[in-house]
Amino acid sequence: MKKITLVFSFMSVFLLEAFSTARLQIIHNSADAAAATVDVYVNGTLFLEDVAFRTATPFANVPSGVPLTINITPPNTSLVSSVFTTSVTLINGSTYVAIANGIVSTSGYSPATPFNLYVYTAGREAASTTGNTDVLVFHGATDAPTVDVAEVEAGAGTIVNNLSYGEFDGYFELATDDYALQVQDETGAVTVAAYEAPLASLGLQNAAAVVLASGFLNPANNSNGAAFGLYVALPSGGALVPLPNSTARIQVIHNSADAAAAEVDVYINGALAVDDFAFRTATAFLDLNSNVANAIAIAPGNSTDVNNSIATFTYTLDRNETYVVVANGIVSASGYSPATPFNLYVYTPGREAASTTGNTDVLVFHGATDAPTVDVVETLVGAGTIVDDLSYGEFSDYLELSTNNYEVQVRDETGNATVACYQAPLAALNQAGNALVVLASGFLNPANNSGGAAFGLFVALPTGGALVSLPTCVDVSVNDILNLNSLNVYPNPVSERVLTVSTSENIINTVVYDLAGAEVTTQIHTNANAVVNLPANISTGVYMLQVKTANNTFTKRIVVE
Image (tube, rainbow, N blue to C red; front, side):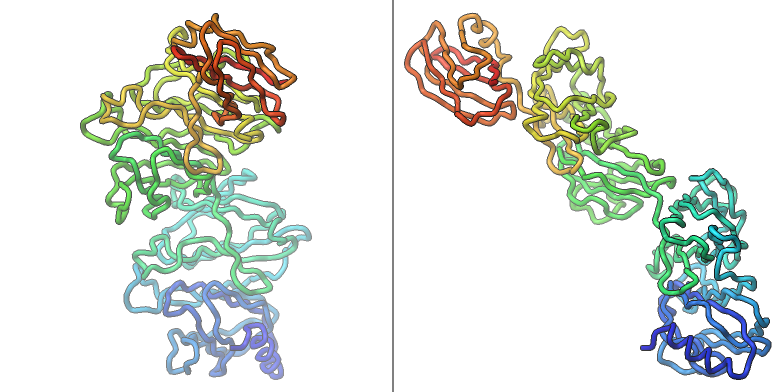
């Protein structure tokens, strides 16, 4: 197989011996599988060999002033196999862009727009103004409607108006910058697709390029051919450069405690995006197309296609925005009280990292269907009420916290009755610099909810995976409260790694835990006064000392300096 550039150069030299010349670039943009690669004959002579879909030749000299018969054939065939024939006469000294486009197959494509060679007669190889980038636009997507193209980054607005299939829009003379484009229907009301146009990042200063609408909006109706996109043909030729889709970032968290949704499949625009997505797991942050309508469908696990979905939601995400989406609620018709309907709860702007170096940012979501409106009160460092009157389905704003170890009480909305108490060991969990989502999850009363998962606070990490359970406080039992006056621990804070513990009863054992719930040391005792030796390598910080007697187990915080 000869390289296009070599064939082009060889044939150009041969033809130039007899004729004056024009400049020509040929771009292969036919998405028909039968034309995946083609050969090009000029006046009966093989001119270009094995030209692939979405490739371009460089600009080169071709004969002008004389009729040229151009034949397009399948690769490694002769002229009798031509799928297209045309005759052109080029003007001496002119520059042309020719685009091979359309359908050669007799079936399998809708619409089957016939193959043709579309020629632009005032082509450019370089920008007309130094420092600019000149862009020629061509509509080459056979099943796409007449469109507008709007620029939304620099505020240029509609730059292409009512461009139909097979049409060119003349060169745009642009400052070499990075732009964002939206392909819209001809009314300008519906965005079909959105793309980044990074002219500066692509190094196109002083260049002229061709941007082509390519492929199919509906591949399923077109033999599952190449999907629609915007592609750039460079003046130097070669493979067309795809313009990246404009995207948003999204994390999806599965927090529906309904057993019928214990494992689900997630489809985005009909395609399986997350397979076997389990309760109390989260995706990492993902890129999702922005500025277009995205249909998000939830189906039972092991589903065969999107038609099995139990719920579908449509969202249009903003370009470069970040979202947290929580799947929550009940899908079953019975067995749950209250049977709060399944929904997707969306928070924006989400965060993947803390806004301040060294901090941990925490977003709180109330996802327990049978829990009342609550407050969240921090009790270890004295921060007080950090979330006020949070109801089911609501997010707090991000809490921007120093990465310490905390203890939080979930209270009713009066702030008086404690529903539950949890440790939030951000430092022990090494969450400095991260942004987290803390979710109220499960049921306060599993017996009224088909024996489902019990209430708890769980953490979704920005990297996704199984949610992390926050450990419950170990010092809020009734016995602890009644007996703390009979427990003496000293010194506290402790600096010499030795504690003395005394109670009114004989002590059976003592256990020291860190705030992540990990056991640090366990020691056996036989009287009411005990010496607890802490490990020599214990880190400074807050720990929990659990003391067990014959009649009671209670706990006290200790501080190691």
